Length: 110
Image (cartoon, rainbow, N blue to C red):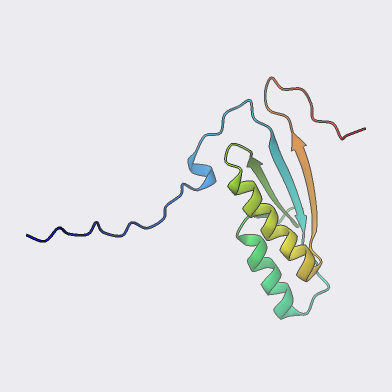
């Protein structure tokens, strides 16, 4: 009898919201502003890119996300996507580090 090959498994990762991050880790708070002066096709491309990593708040006309640092690959993916949007479309990104519970506030280097 010929041994069978194991079936190919699809790469699966849990979405960030599926995992409860530890409370003591810092988080990145992201605020993103679309470049509204773009031609319609470019504006649509920009929003499609941002939509992959952030949620839109119509009350403030701002995109936002809070990213836990418990899985370093996820913040890296989010920031790479947003920096690409900034480079290509002029999207404005504001990143603030929020300290985790029980940690000292993060301050900029002196």
